[in-house]
Amino acid sequence: MSLPIEDYAFLGDMKTSVLIGADGSVDWLCLPRFDSGACFAALLGDEGNGRWTMAPAGEHRLEARRYRPDSLVLETEFRSEDGVVRVVDCMPIGAHRTCLIRRVEGVEGRVRMRSEVVARFDYGSIVPWVRKDGRRLHLVAGPDSCYLDSDVEFDAGSDEDPVTEFAVAAGDSVDFVLTWVPPRSPSPEPVNTDVLIDHTDEVWREWASRCNYEGEYRDAVVRSLITLKALTHSPGGGIVAAATTSLPEQIGGVRNWDYRYCWIRDATLTLLALLESGYTQAAADWREWLLRAVAGEPSQMRIMYGIEGERRLPELELDWLSGYEGSRPVRVGNEAAQQWQLDVYGEVMDVFHQARVHGIPPKEPAWQLQRSLMDFLEAHWREPDNGIWEMRGPRRHFTHSKIMAWTAVDRAISGVERFGLEGPLEEWKRLRDEIFQDVCENGYDPERRTLTQYYGSSTLDASLLMAGTVGFLPPDDERMRGTVDAVQRELCRDGLVQRYSMDETSRRVDALPPGEGVFLPCTFWLVDNLVMQGRVDEGREIFEHLLSLRNDVGLLSEEYDTNTGRLIGNFPQALSHIALVNTAYELDRNREGPAQQRASSGSG
Image (cartoon, rainbow, N blue to C red):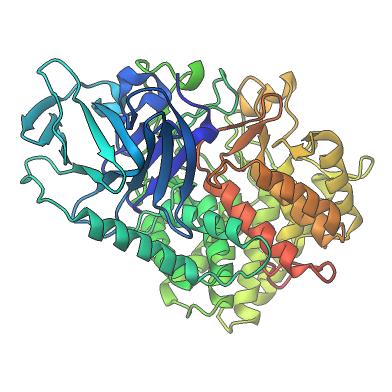
C-alpha cells in the first residue's frame, strides 16, 4: 500500500518529475517526460509495480526531512540504533541526460543501508532485462532504457531485482545515479555528482532570489513558485497541471484523472502568478508555446494539450494497477481534451493582457491571435459548454463560462484603450454589455441573492467566486456579497470549500457518482473575496488554516478530505499553489484596507 499522499516529496528537472516517500522510496517516476510511462509506479499499485528503496537495513525512524532553502534538493535523515544517515535526492538541471541522483551521507555513527531497485516499465507492467557490468546496471525493455551507476555493487540475478547492502560512516558518502537514455543510444558517460548537485541547488536558489514578494508568507510563496517552475516543461514552455495521474478525489472513488498535461486555464493562471512575482521571461516563453499550440483556427483551440502542444490525448484505463488505496480505474490520457470550454478564451485573453501590463512588449502574431479569438467568441459565446470542471454530462450554459467570455472581451477592450492596439472598440463594448446583461438576467437568483452554477439552476459553484477577482462585479456589489455568503453557507465543510453542489442530482450535470474532498484552490478564491470585501481577518484565518494543510515540505494536492485529515487528488497540484501565491499577494495588498479590484481586472 502506498504512503499517505502528504508523505511524498516532489522533485523535478523541468522535463519530468519524481515522488519520493518519507520512507526513502521512489514510488513514482516517469521517464523521460512528465507524461511518459512510469518506470516506478508503486504509487498506483504496490511494490511489484516498481519502486526504488533507500533506507537503513534494520529498525529505524525518520529523523527529519526538508528541501534545502529556496531549492529543490531534498534531504531526508533517518536514525537507527547505529547512527544517523542523510539521503540527498536531486534531479539535476543541466545534465546531459535526464537523471536522478541519490546520495547517502553518514551523519553519526556507522549505519548499514539497504537499497532495492524494482524497475517496471510502462506503468509497472513490464519487467526489464537487467544487465550487470561491475557497478553499472543496464535496465532495458523495448524502447525503455535506463542505466544505474553506483559506488557500491548490486546483487542482480537473472530473475531477481537488484539489491545492495552497504555501510556508511559519519563523513562518508555513497552515490547512485539513474539515467534515462534514448533507444539505441550509447551508454552515458559518468557524471560528477558533486558538481550536478551544487549546480542544481545554485540554479534554484538564484531563481528564487528573483521573486519580488517580500510579505510575511514569503517562504510559502517561494516554495509554491519553485513547485510551479518545476512543473514547467522547459524545452517547450508547456506547464503541466500536476505531476501525477489518477490520485483520487475520493479514496476508493472513480474520480481519478490524468493531470500530466497542459491545461490552458492552469497555465495562464500559473503565468499570472509568475508575472506578479517578477518572472516575465516565463510569460514570454509560454506565449510562444501558446502560439504554437493554438495555431490555425480559433475554433480548434483545445482546453488542454500535451506538453509539446499535442492535441490527441486518448484516455485509457490501466487494469493491471490496483489504484491508489484501491481507487480505480487508473487512467492515462484525458478525453476532456475534446471538450468545449468557453472560459479558456477569457483566461488566454487575460494572460496576454497581463503580459502587456507587466511590460512584455506586444507581439503582432499574439494580437492577431487575440483578434481571431474575439471573432470566434462573438459568434459562439451563447453556446452551451462543458464548464470549468469538465462536466461529462450534457453541455449547459455555465455561468462561470459566460463570466469568462465577458473577461475576454474586457481584456480586448483594454488592448485598444490602454495599449493602442487596433480593434473595433465600440463593437466590443456593446458585446461586453450584452454578455453582462445576459449573465445578470439568467445566471443570478435574486431570491437567494447568488449567482448560480448554470442558467436556470439553483445549484452553486465555487468557480463563481472568480466573478469578483476578474472584475465582472465589484467585490462589494450585493450580488457578489450574496454569492460569497451562499458559498460559505452551502459549499463549506469545516471552513473549506467544495467545488459545487454535489448530490445524486448532480450526476445529471457531471455524469459521475457524487463524492469528493473539499477543493483547495476554491478555498483560496473564497479568501480573495473576503479580503476584497474588507473581511481581512476572516480571510487571513482561513488562509493560515490552508497553509497548515501543506505537508512537511510545503506541498499541496488538489483536494483535502476533512473526515480523515488527508490530502487527496493529484499531487503536487499547480492550481493549489497558484492560488496560494495569488492569495498571499491579495493579503499583502490589503494590509491597510480592502482593494476594490484586483490587478487582473482590465477596463471593466
